[in-house]
Length: 486
Image (cartoon, rainbow, N blue to C red; front, side, top):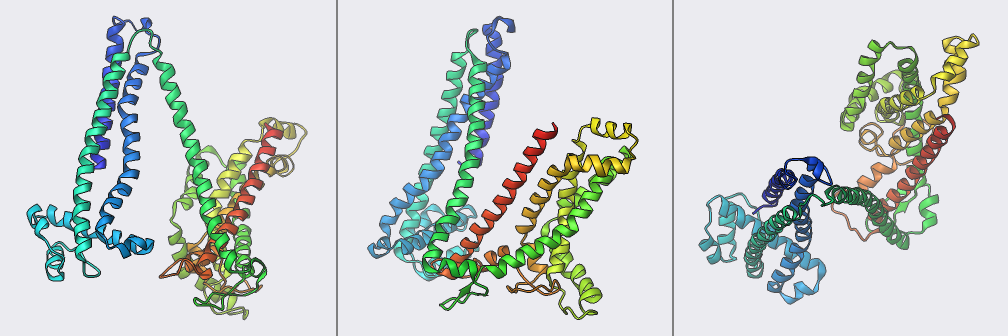
């Protein structure tokens, strides 16, 4: 029984539990909900929770433990030399899973039967012919040990799936029956349900925290491995980026940092004025009818995939800037440049800054505007001298968040700015950013123990710290604003 089918059964039992629990609560109260401690719906939810949650938690635990147990069992078929080498063991187990999956596909399509699978040997002609009929490609000849392990893997997986279905359905039915038995007029169903909801909220918060810790640890551990192989001073103060697999690499961070900051500054020079002016118009000048169609049209920009912006930079913006500005003034002849990427990322950030600034401007108390109008100020004077100063901390927070988004952009930089890591003040030259080099160093057949690959984690950790500082600064500014003007 598949996991999806099990989840469907649990959901059906939970829905049935809600209906049965509610009806039973009304029945034990003689049809009068006032005789119950909680509303009838809480009894239904309590029954549904006990029918779904225990089985669901066991299913999650089962999915984690089952592969470990099965792989440990089938690994006994592998040669001792393979079992002793962790890397070779993982590769062999991957072959076992691939062959087992191919046998399952062949069985489902009728190309093989269980009897034929049991009699199948590991010769290249036999196994490849059978699996080739259903389009399962084998990268190398399968050894008898791998084939035997694959057969055991299939059998163990089937037995585990059957046992899993029995255990989980039994748990769900048991929880359903126990919950129905507990229903009584003095049963505190509401308290139980609210406690479960509280635990779910705490679990959601814990998952977010653990995810952040996992991200930090994954980058920090590999960054430490990198700095054990490459001097930390040469990384943070080096002026040359020239990775060479095999030795002799120069992995200076400064050229990538410069390209990242340069592109971000240009993006903000584009996004901040346009986004802020659009927010001022929508909040202070536009009528409700005009606002109702202009604001959604601006925010449509935020829904466009970044790869589309990258194509826009590559085909339209880059050639335009090259032909109109770069070549006539002798500043360059390439469409890929810092200016191209900065302008397009700025366009991408317009709805982000505009929407946040609009909300912040609208949050300025109307009493400040009325007081300004009361002493004879015009609307433009009120906006310049009252509204914007009051909203400035919040707008600054929105700008910093926009900067964080610009720093983390990758696809537009790849297509619009090129991949050259260098120090230059010419905005019409090709440069690159940290995010692009992170992708480049982890793409392809790389050695994860070499500094040329591990440098991607050091770059990622540095980028994480930079964006984290910007976000913390933005949150601090916004909180200060709220305390002052609420």
